[in-house]
Figure 1 (cartoon, rainbow, N blue to C red):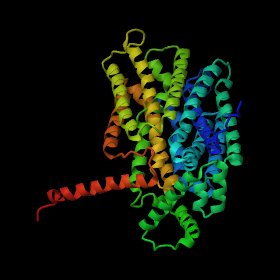
Figure 2 (cartoon, helix red, strand yellow; figure 1 turned 180 degrees about the horizontal axis):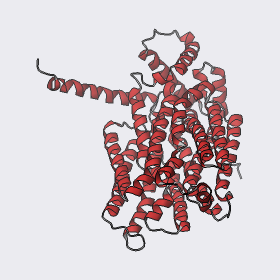
Figure 3 (cartoon, rainbow, N blue to C red; figure 1 turned 90 degrees about the vertical axis):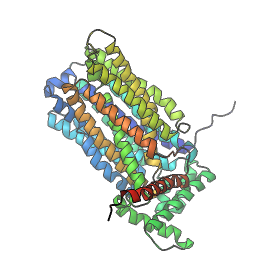
Figure 4 (cartoon, one colour; figure 1 turned 60 degrees about the horizontal axis):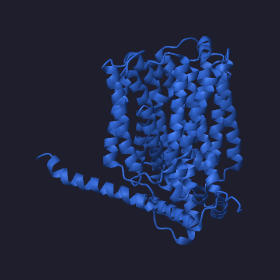
Length: 502
């Protein structure tokens, strides 16, 4: 009987790095149920819809702000150290929430948690993308999303279990668990995760980069492909800056100097001519991912199920936990087939499916077909919430985050991805803040709003989004270049018709 073959270390490193997604998922799964627990309400008082939205969403603006600087931190210190610092900050914020004796202390804890979340979450995808061979990049980059969904399950069912405790420990316990896991992950990331070989190479540390590639178990062929892509990115940067040619003998030195300069000017570099279209597309997609309404569903699942007719708190809590379990289950095949499904097709067709589901629920509420205790309408809404979560998990949850990272050249990947995640956090804030307000003012307005956003996104992606599945950096460059050339040709063609008569 032969020995079981261990996976390459790059797979193990990606699996460990993906555990950072568990923290984000747990917080998302915890905050909604916690804020409607009897002991939480008795301690902090009953909150209006606006205050409830601010309480839940207070984590998101700090996350959006800190994510703008996450790329600079990751480029300066390296990906693992940036992840470690971010998760430690996240853990301190969760500990402060668990210890809160006043609502303001709870909000401060969420803001600190948000700063950490913004620093580390986008860097997870960048790190995995950089250490993964092209052939399995999609599958491994989906790892954090799978762990986010697992965190949702753990968060919901942790609250379902602790809600029966007859003291403030019922809502403090989930945050204590979250803080402990965050600090543990921070320590492990700092001590165990190796630095990104691409980051080392761009800093002129060639021998260290080769040593880390050997440690990770990446084949020589895949390694050469990665290095060719990095060289291609460096050449594009020089061309965009109209710099003189550099002799081959000085490549490592010039690469290090170029990286030092780009670290200082990274926020401007992502808007240079050769990458600004990709930056804009990544920012748009990551923002619209949240405007689909997914976090409105996840944060306020108990409220949505209660609105649909599940009046019992236990029933709505349990239904929320089941929805998280469904999301986790369908993310597994999405991870396995991430490199077989096209990013473009999953975004376009997924957007159409999401918009149809939202429009259906909105129409049922607008037509007064949903009754709180009887009728088929409420069950259609309840099933539709699950269907929405399934479609999202199979399409937008997986494809968009991978796409936003892999369309970027090496020199701007960390900063552009961080900017895109900042857009994601900002849109998330709007969704988390407005969902309870919209639900209190109108039973159907939120559904039509989110459905319209997803439909618009699907149409725009059908026109402007090139496919990247399985493509190298050179091929992605050519795809965007051809789109740009077609756009320029179109503008030249219509110019005679738009020119003002003299």
